[in-house]
Length: 328
Image (cartoon, rainbow, N blue to C red):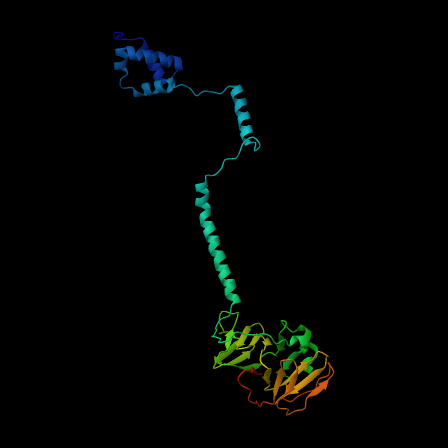
């Protein structure tokens, strides 16, 4: 049963002091209980909402303070969880791992695919024309230790000092034969109609090289020692690498037409044969050489002896059919 309201309740003075300066929780609890019973105090302080807010704030239970024993137990628990031997580290969910790492995996796969495509593209030739019959490389000129050196110079100084050409340094891929040409040398390769021109470069339109391929005739202007070319002509194959190229031939003999300069042939015995123009130089399948049109005498001399030869710009016609004619 609620207490009847008093006109001048003694608690009103205490409430006014509490409103001005909140006191202890015990006093707040006492006043809160009195407000529920005293109608006069409720009417007197009905407009003072701050009183009730202060009462609620004071009566709100204070946060629990852990005891020293609880603090010690918490520390032990934290140390135990941080020890990798006693607990396992938190694992990231698999779906979260897939979300973050899947784009990187896709990007890596794309880069790997592009890199493989570029690598194999560089290994293949471009500008290919159809070849009716398969290529052969049964002729082994290297087994006879035969090397050909072409030079546009007509003086022996071309083989001395800085301009010396060492046969051992020629890039020969066994069982093929390596040929070396001077820089800025014009070459005409005449072959079958189904000749094919290959290059490891993306295009032939290079500033250092010009070429044509028409009805089996390939015209080269070599001015860059690092450009790669290859001429495939029926049973014969000619690889041009800068000013150096390799010939494989399956014909009965290889026909070489020299336009200018001279050709030095180093045989297995170490002797050097100097072949001069005009005339076609025939290379038999057994590796022997002969001049089909001997307009000038063939000379033999020791390894380090050379003679000057005056170039002849005339050119004789080459054999057709199964012969590969190279014009230098």
